[in-house]
Image (cartoon, rainbow, N blue to C red; front, side, top):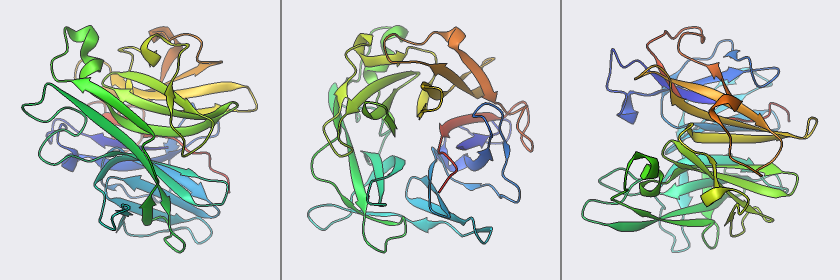
Length: 296
């Protein structure tokens, strides 16, 4: 699992420049510990995927590779997404998957200059957030991609939500892609809530889950989600980060059988916090879980 952390006593944790990326390991998805020898580095909203003997850790604009067979962490390198016009595509919040041909596919939200990319630009009352995917080019080693045709999801949001219970209507960000028993599942963060979309095809058009009210799996129970389907147990693991005790944030997990009904607060349990993770501290905010199975 990759996540970022920040100490609010030492820095402004609302600024992604002050986030540090950590990588943890687990035997069961619930108890997590640091990867031996790993050194945290500057980055935010990370995700990761393993292909063969290489672990790729993504954050906006960069990827860091870990060569498992030689136990070597490489320095971060830039990630380039090229659009159909041959120009670079601005992107944020990457989520990685390996397709059936062994190519890494990045899901992401199209970037926006001069403001919070999860919300409408200043002066707009409504806007559309676009989520796309891009496929690794041959020899790109996780750093060079070409944008796939079409959009995976388009979400219209408003700049003026009515009340805190409707805040989710004013924000959309942080896609997370994974595969379930019936096809591909895409989580979209709606503030402190999680919305679910699905498609039979990896690069298809994702439709909102009709079994959930407004497609929301989690309502004000945590956001910036990461999902996994455990075929052995037939259960989904949904990870989110959420506030605990005021300004502190923790990573929590819910285990559930389906998307037939929304998750409740009681279904989540804390699995990583500043106080529980070695090298951090009780004041630390830990956020933005990114999950991958550690097998070739």
